[in-house]
Picture 1 (tube, rainbow, N blue to C red):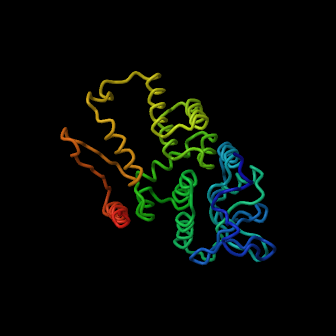
Picture 2: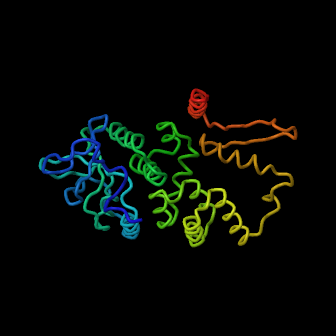
Picture 3: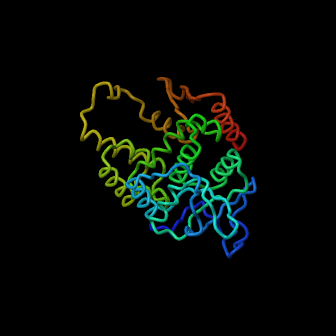
Length: 304
């Protein structure tokens, strides 16, 4: 399950365009605003001398470098070309420093061609939308937007047209142990598996169940049941958390599946009359409603 040095799936592929540029560097993948997504040697990048941040938490930096050494740098730093064949950091000095500590040779970068902050943000957003990101890389992309631009989850939600609940739940994946993050990166575990594991507070228990999922090929539903069992074994179940007699387990499973499809809270209620009931999809605002309607309309258009 090892990944190549600096290996993020955001790196340009051989089919993405030119493979060489000035000074023999990979010419990268053009982005809409004229910037490009490019792999650059760590040694050809230097920090901005006007960077106001001078102190970096060494312990946090070491922890990040260990994570990068194991799972790679998941999101690019932003640089601008110098007069020669070197590049000056615009955003991401902490990630660059940690990558050096991790011993990476090259890292993914967005090479900017403008000073405008909104254009840089658009370049990062395009990278988020154009790439086939796995759940952990998506989480890293959200974290980068929040960290580099100081925006809130609400602002990010409005900008990328994704619900706040999806952003918040995806960001939580970065709290998982690195061994589980590797499973997410190589597709061994799905986001559904990971979300189930997040309900456990014990990291060793998380890793134990994750390994069991991989060894036995457990489904998300089986994982949820195992997590509930593990949690019940450690914590006394309070009366208000017990399910009422007659709980419709099948309706709950359907609601969970629909919640994954529509990325929102879903309630399924069935009456005693066979085949009747209602499905309630929750939306947070007008944009979220339009997003859900778009999914429903696309599904209706492809229905036989």
